[in-house]
Length: 359
Image (cartoon, rainbow, N blue to C red; front, side, top):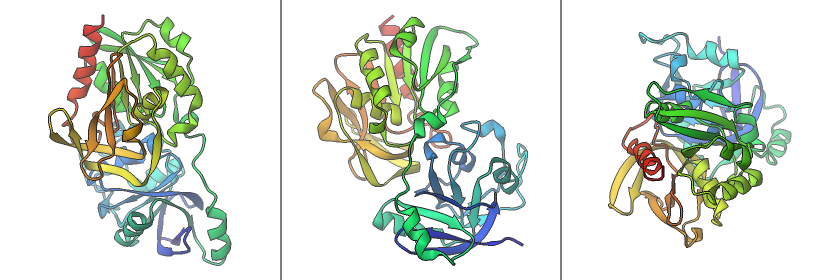
């Protein structure tokens, strides 16, 4: 029988549920994702570092655990909250069940909880800290202790520790991917387009990257507050002076903008899910995109050498930037979309075109 567990919010509200996965107390930043599928990609997305994730879709675990679908080697989130957890998965690719997997990677889970009510609190009051625990005996003390929690050292904790190389079947280009907490599918999309890919740690110097003579530079997604990454921002500022074709995704988009003088802000509850509308300003066309971010570039802060290319269809926040004085562009959403819609995968082809034009 599952043990009773509680989720305590920093405003004093608490929810009762049942425990699955690893059995341990943890504190994190509470966020929700509206994705209806792709729970394995959600669990292994490094951008969830330091966060407790609510799945708004009610049934999770029905196709089990499929390591080939992982977006990183191990989960970075603090805890996982679902309405119903499927204990008997069925899929021809299934290699295990969710409970066993979470136990093996040390991530606690909570189910049989009112995720709709919990999500409405986050929507109304914004992202807040929380604690997963197994007793309410220290409720007042727990509330005070979780208030100061902050996600820190996020990029350094999720970036690759050493350089990695991936060879294309028919190599045409050499691309360096700076890993700020990259999803694996970004690399897959580049390799299948003929890119020999060198993945480097977040703190690799501009000098070392330039010594690799890249045809293009890819800036990955990643977790945390973008403005904390002062070293990475300075490196990008130096790299931009060499006008190498550059494509940034999510955190990479934010860091590139910061390197050019833009500012970022924390959103009320962020954009997380596989159904976020992004409107391309040039064509007035709306794409359904996969997103996972809690910060955004401030539209009015985009410098004169750039222009906003995409905006979010719900709140108008910046979803993309094109640069006028260098072959570079970036988007806030995930064109590699794993899991999620493939509507914007053409942006990888746009990056390849930039490389070809500037060779």
